[in-house]
Length: 406
Image 1 (cartoon, rainbow, N blue to C red):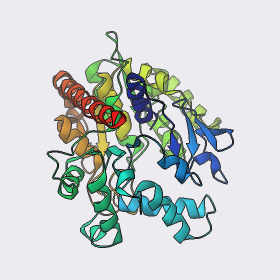
Image 2 (cartoon, one colour):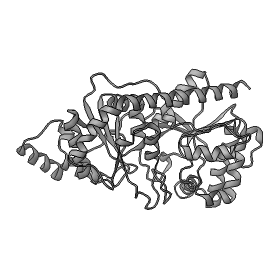
Image 3 (cartoon, helix red, strand yellow):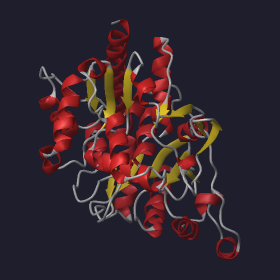
Image 4 (tube, helix red, strand yellow):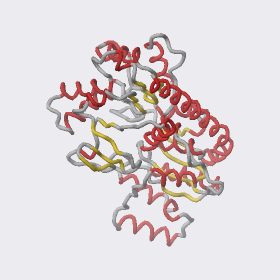
């Protein structure tokens, strides 16, 4: 997510560090690119949301390794299934010659496979997770390479308790704590507006029924007295299919109109949705998205990183999650592992009353009670999020300063 990379840009600016951002692959390279970035030079791409430019790493391993400090920032970098998926993308989307070659590239960059301890000692990882690993993953070659990486890294902080505990046991000498946070918490800047009135909505990651979103959203809006509005956090194909957005427009017309509708206006709205052209999704830069979040009294979403950024800004987020979302690969809970990063986030924040289980979503009075929970939890959870961010900035800054000064 753009907020993750912008967080590191802010840290690098404080340190006065000259940073090169690398990507192992970029969506602009795909045969049918989904958008979000564009090529701006040979081997250089620009991300539309963050505005940052990235170099494409393949074929530049030696140059990558020559940096004074190597920072793995956020995401799933060292997780077993992520390495497999990266190899799959390189092979199928990037036309790397064979699956074995693709796997070697992923291991060379993400696990520093075969590199001497001197290289590993210049590397730091922060904000990643191992949440979808299993015991069997550690029993093979991956386990050997992962342990060697963890033993040699200058610093290692993971965003969840499970990953931190695994890392602590692998580190030599034993680390006091490898618990970090999501990298986005490091970002500072925009805070919630004193005149915030909107109820921001974005659904993009789960099979939640649009009609259920509408029922919960209407009750929440009525309870808080806010004006519902769509937050364009992401677009298809990565996010919610557009058929879901169309059904949501039918079930909750106030989300677009911002006010109660008469029976006639509802009928007109329905005709416009059914007969009219599809709704074109906005693509906004990160700073504009953050501004819109800050203008909301609460966010209703199923999307992890939107919830992270809402709490970071000081806007409470009611978050949908699905315990059964293990059918095949799922970016929130893996494939059958059952560790859902949304549940983990709300556990860390002590915000579990605002986590809505899709197996039994609240309706009626239960949905209206969410509004009271939002009011009660806003201040303590926002304070917890701020403390997590402050600790993360301290860990990261101290580690990089010591590394750069070596």
